[in-house]
Image (cartoon, rainbow, N blue to C red):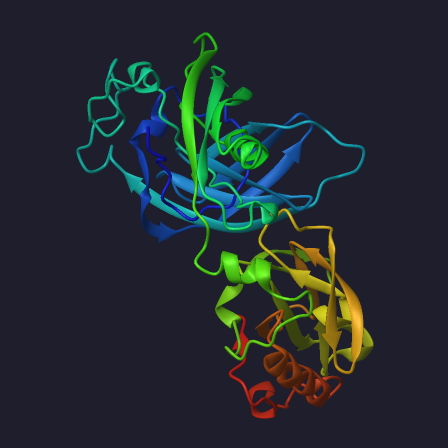
Length: 371
């Protein structure tokens, strides 16, 4: 059975339980028709997600650095949550309005036996039960695989709320290479919910293909290699913001596969009101990677100016700014020393300057700004 997921989604998923039965079948999130606004509130043993649209909406968000996704139907969704000792921190990454087949004449009924949600017949046991994953998390290629390719067949037990209750390896080629990566990915999948359905077992094949540069990367020396590709500003996304009255904290996320260093400048608050205040990954000793990246929390030795320093891989980068103030940033691939050098010079020339100074005029690279 071929691997079905094709979208580059790096997310964890929780099983929802408030959408009307089978309503998710009317949502086609492969077709995004608009953007929306969402709010996410953690309330005891569940998470409440609301949107400003009654159409189907996909909401990607982080709770304490862990990525999740909700499929909101008719403006709301609820997800089960295991309460922690402290109040969790929520960052909303995006809200996308999906094509609603109920509004364009599409069918909304549950697929019948032997039929996929898209109407195609199948002899596969999973499709015979109508269980085709709604959201599939692509696996991370293990660093220790060293360019190998193969697959893992995973037996998945799906509960009535669409959650993966159990996952185990049925077969793998080569053995014991991709097993853990496949299990980690499949445990985050989400299937259609059906109250009262008995736990159902399906088999999913997860395929692994080495990236074109995988062999070269494993053969490369441990020292960081220079990469003169220039600024990677398009990798930066705003996850969420926290308004503390006189100060706003903005959480920035990495939307690309490449680890990046972020250099940001914003108008400061309180004694720095009216002046630029710059914050950088090098100051924080962090490297920004996508949410769920297996490197989060590990360290790497990187050149920072003339020194070799330890940096920690993180899935978010925080900037502070005055209320109603804009912020600017430069993002560089973490191994692009030419870009990082230009970014360091930019922040030095802007930091603590009057807010009337144009940040773009102080940079040799194109600088991105908030909107």
